[in-house]
Length: 170
Image (cartoon, rainbow, N blue to C red; front, side, top):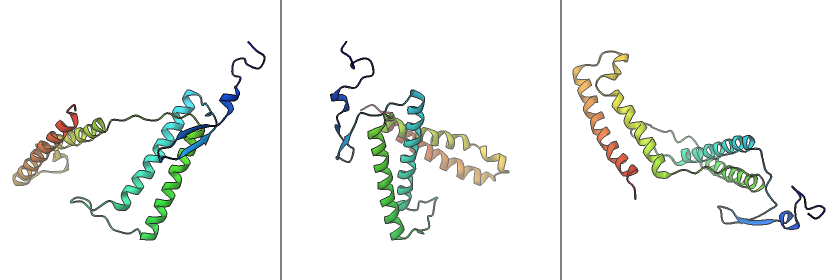
């Protein structure tokens, strides 16, 4: 082994900048990534994925419409929306820059499995409410119980169809 080429020694090739394409399509000029311990890498990865999700969720709320069961006040001005979008872009860029410098773990998720998990949880919640499971809140009249149970049964049937699509293999 040549002097200076022992374990942990960096070669000129390793020290030079590496080019990689970012998700936005831009090439990032970055040196070799800093290696974290497994525990630090896991903790940092979870933290920054959570930060990215919070940013995405905040932006979703800017354009989220009211629903049948959730009426939203439009209390964010156009200027505030623009500023929040600008700041979200800056936050994403900062996460991208950090990821270009530090070895982090990217989460891998299946859209199909994520959708199926959400639908399955909603279906279980509905089914557990059927047949007077609301009794802890007081007695229901027979008419109210029938209306709720019939509606829950119809919603459950729709959720089951949605779940079957999500669980089908392409």
